[in-house]
Amino acid sequence: MKLLYEQSQFPVLQNRVYDSADEAINCIKGEIRIVENSQTGLIQNDLFNPNLLNYDQNYNNEQGFSLAFQNHLTQVSSSRRSSRTQQGYWR
Image (tube, rainbow, N blue to C red; front, side, top):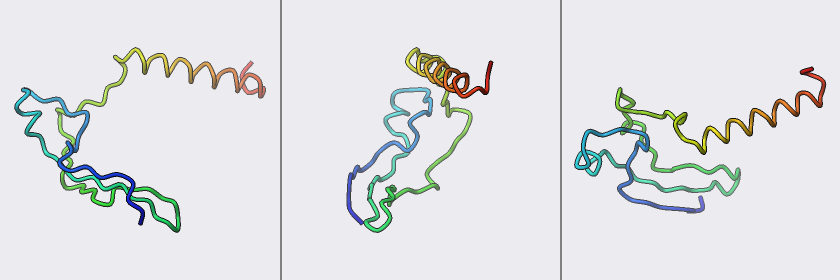
């Protein structure tokens, strides 16, 4: 395994909403060690611990309010529509 990146005490949920700054600062943290398998080329977090994850009512992965994400969706939709029209799927 080839070490690519390491980080200690990293928040395990990037999309969790907290009631206070103090609660966010003291959130559950995990370890990251990104490694590449030299035989397969697969990359993984060697220290991933699923037991640290808790997807409760405070987890919010809503991206629809992001203007950048809305623009991305519009661009992908237009690209796919154009591609399918050129291939004769949509008329």
